[in-house]
Amino acid sequence: MASSKTIRIGGASGYWGDSQEAPRQLVLKGNLDYLVFDYLAEVTMSILVRAKEKSPELGYARDFVDLAMKPLLHEIKARGIKVVANAGGVNVAACAAALAKVAEDAGVDLKIGTVEGDNLTNDIENLRTEGTTEMFSGAPMPDGMISANAYLGAFPIAAALDQGADVVITGRCVDSAVTLGPLIHEFGWTVDDYDKLASGSLAGHILECGAQATGGNFTDWRDTVDGWDDMGYPIAVCWEDGNFAITKPEGTGGLVSRLTVGEQILYEIGDPEAYIMPDVICDFSGVTLTETGKDWLEIAGVKGRPPTATYKVSGTYKDGYRATAMTVVTGFDAAEKGQAFANALLKRTRRLFVERNLGDYRDTAVHIIGAQTLWGKNADEHAAAAREIITQIDVRHDERAALELFSKETTGVGLSMTTGRTSAGAAGRPKITPVVAQFAFQIDKARIQPKVYINNKPVKYETKVPSEYSNFPKVRHAAPETPLKLTSDTMIEVPLVALAAARSGDKGNNANVGVIARKPDYLPWIKQSATEEAVKEYFGHVVEGDVMRFDLPGMNAVNFLLTNCLGGGGTSTLHLDNLAKTYAQQLLALPIKVPGDLMESQV
Image 1 (cartoon, rainbow, N blue to C red):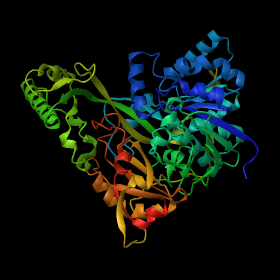
Image 2: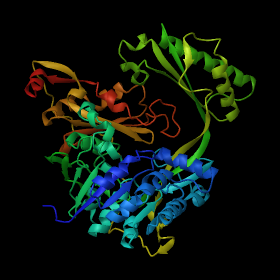
Image 3: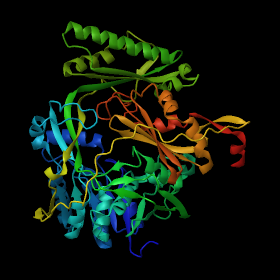
């Protein structure tokens, strides 16, 4: 039984650039206690690092100050809503100063808490000397490192709230910490309350991607399409015992259901029994989802165990340059002409590189958009017959001069290659951008002391240490127990989408595809056809590592982890889908064998 005290937390941002209407909707219609924002995807961190290099006043999510907070300051203050955001990026102090100036100009008295201590940039050379290696590949720390930020947890945020902060701004913290911090503060959870910390982390994981939990990016898109123009953003209604419900503001678009929220729970979690947070290792395998009312889903069954003794650190380093050329090709044999154009352009520029002693490309990729380029060998028979495509050519090189030559030649061959070619929109010569790649590693928690400030004044904060730590868990390389072989006299094949919903995303160089069965009876049949081997073969055009499948019996779901499939990860890859967002849509076309009478019985 849930306790009587409830805390309502609204998730107003899933990424830097999310709709500026989200915080307004939640403040005016959500009856909130807290408004939280997540801005810091790994790609975003690399953008903020480059911004701060250009100006010491930049390096934070400016939208938080200018578009989210400034128009709503008076309402937020009047309603007593507290705000937590990781908008500080790589320049927390500058973000806090900008918000303080906006509050002062508006005549709003605002107590601004900040959390720092995640920035390890000044320690990079010491860490290199110590032999720091990449946490998954074991590669040594590269030259050209320009930043290193640890993923802090939720307790420093709670400490700032304990000191009366109206707004808490952090730098790099784990995404769910902006939700867990308020719950620790409100309910007095301790570092050893592992089940509650895990449950609060799951609430934060659901909120951290905004409307993805309320029908955005949903498999059954027709169920929410009529509300896309006014999508509702998620609200977690949390109780002291750790259980919680997900809902959204009344009268808004979208949907809160087992499938919409279930897709988000599965999103990018890897091993569901070992989802590693700074404050706890979460086990989501037994989570239950219960629809108890319209747009009201209750969540229970989360388990936790002691955290690891290390923080994950996201480092970035300069890794050459990249450029992208795009051109439209139409008419007969469009896909074949587009590929021939790309091949000829790359051959031509390589010859010119040799003449100028520039060296070869680091990497190249050609995408024939409109001819099912993402599907590899799974493309259907109509792909090659497309009469209008976009040829996208992505290239990387160590030297900027080489890509400047590529950029000029892309337009310089306009009269000497394919017919039926026109520019793609307003695209002119390809823009050359530096590549800021990620280098992730671990660091002992004892070496990092988070710092908490209220209105620029330090307040006492001592890191709370749990009674024990867990070893860093290794991802399981053995599949869960294979289901019993099931047979029927009337077997048919249906696409996975008839049996399940799914969502996908990236984790570094790996992809995660979560699959949730529409009916419990469907799950054994899904597992029988969608084996690790079958999924690896299906994604053979991108997967270079292993495929692992994990069970979530509480949700009637499975989760697939596809390793080494993104060409190095989102900040440096040349893959067309650099964040694995389309993998679920592809997997949903996988044929699944089921008894014909099973499908008939569900009609």
